[in-house]
Length: 245
Image (cartoon, rainbow, N blue to C red):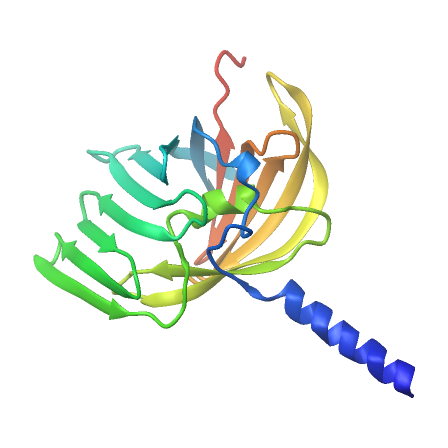
């Protein structure tokens, strides 16, 4: 009986560790993967079985002495202007510092801390909201977490809840979860690099209540592909390879 109780206790402890909420810290990610880079993804939507290109997503990662900066630019077909999001965080822990977002529909700036301050300017409604939101726990910026997924200590069977802060007046505001629900091994066929060994990472988040699947290179953590299912829509982003035929 004693051995049985011990086994149950150990199992519960392991489950708690596996699903513990990840927060910024020096051990939250593998720093060897966090390095300056620029990459482009073609963005597709599916209508029945037809794949339609709807835009391009460019990501630039910059490092300086103290901070890491992630800049994401989105160009949608048929729409004027580029949607730009930039997020800065502490280089050693990924504690968020600032998130700025500008597009044709709204502008937003968040200054992070225990109290999140900034503004949200809804251009369609002509409404500007000042932000003053008190948080009770540490978190990552929701704009940076897709990059963080690539930097995690991925392995077969890996699972992890990630605390993220998101500001969206039409949905949840505050600290919510993104959850890595599973990691498996697989392959991706690159036109330039051939067959690549990848981690296939399943992620759910409370931003859109959707799910994504990332195809991340095991050797260099390059993002080759991401599929997205949210609100009844299926989308996909694929790495743009220069000089690929």
